[in-house]
Length: 252
Image 1: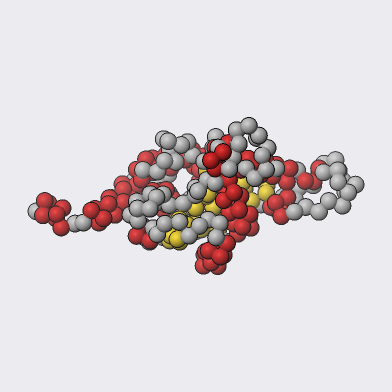
Image 2: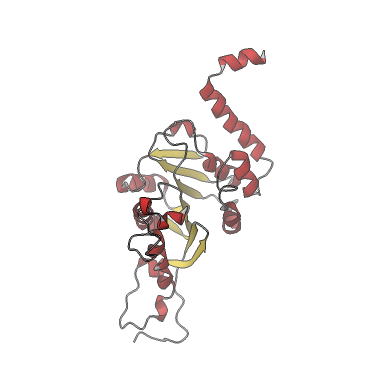
């Protein structure tokens, strides 16, 4: 009987069914992101060391009704491969809507609470449509092309779409040093690289201390309250950065 069923079930259905079985197994480990990553086969644990940081920052959001956007589905051009981290997030956040973008058609990987759009992460019209469809996001994760230019352009458009109190995360930031991705291992302050861009945002945290007459804070000055740098990973915490200087009582 089992042999007959195996013959009748297509390879595609077998793969999609395996995803369901993994999700069932994940049900028994709802609080352990490391374990969930292993069950779903995500490289965020093991190959990378990301889940420990996600666990630390995201645990307070676990039972919230959140919108999570992850750029990049994985699996390259195979329509039924990828989505491992999307299913991991679905297992970890029981009330979340999981949204993703990929340049390939990954619609076959959609399921309840997982919605996937096809297109580029720097297609502003697409990003605007997603924003209009979903609303503001609580978490945005860039695990897309890892091209320096793409990472920065996506952030510039999407960070304003992040809710106050939300997190914007960039993975695989080592490409900031790789010339094939627009980075540099010789000039660490090369304009247009991931780290050059985000290191400058440290100054935004401290704009209240600038000795600049009539300085007008920009959007990042006013809306970034913390930046956390880890190996190949950056967390940007959005909030109202309105702490005044202890020494500069008024603008010079």
